[in-house]
Length: 443
Image (cartoon, rainbow, N blue to C red; front, side, top):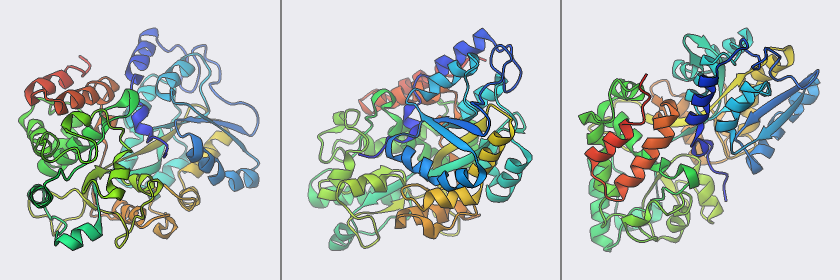
């Protein structure tokens, strides 16, 4: 089983940060609550804290091993599934790491707002300016100050399918959203079975795959400006444009003739673990599945090959209307690396992690990608990951970070997740949108 994507471990972080804000921060930036140094574990030792665990953590440590030896710096990495709650507690208690790998830009902003993070060094800023797009730089910036550099990335919104199944039945990859709906109806009519397999299950974070569906449609249907205003609540969840996105997604997810192949009816969406549809795809029980670029690993684990002429391949969720002359429009996710300490060794590590040298080192080990412009796509471990890198590096691409990760945690990883579960289980759109909107902080 693949490691759960970092963004799914976010539930509960808003309460921890909110409690910290009430307690107050008596130390200056980069200090603990008593003004003491927040993280250095010793000369040439740099502590790094994040959610990346298990095999992915081993690969992370392998990615910087040669650099550690060359620079005489010991990077000590600690993984935690309680990162989002514990990073606030540790910072307040004077026990923050030197560096944290934040899975949500919003949480990094919370830490910067409370005065715990150090502004990025000039070397980090130079790397970000040269190797990262303005959008990615923005995700590491809070209140006009750059604090963090991006690390890894994912491209969301892929629709996974069997090329041989399409070829045998004369199906073509749709070029617009209506075409996707038409294809869904055609497969259902031809086979008499639901085409889509869907899983929202992810323990405390159950519901996040549903938010990805809505985010894809908001960006494609209403555009980047509306998406950006939605993230900041200038366009609330109750706005007709957001309701329209829910209704479009509902044409698939709430239709019992279209979902949930291999698992049951629409009532099984919430209880189906998000990785399980990989097996249904590979076995042929399911024809279509919506998930991010990381899903290729789940398909491989299920015994399938991911390639244009393999068992499973993918196309991006199509746009609304004709987009043949435009670049890709995609949502995605990633991590931001920020520092609590400003000692020299910490700055060196943070700069290295923002460099193309690190990106190529980690990507060449397999399973992940980066939006670093200095990354050689040929280092990626699969064709779909190479395709995702090309999309991220294309200047014509319209990219927006996962909306729920940019929103305050009280809504993004709380009421939005819960609202998706209620909605797909039968609650009406208007009621659910009001409930999600209630998660926004009052000030």
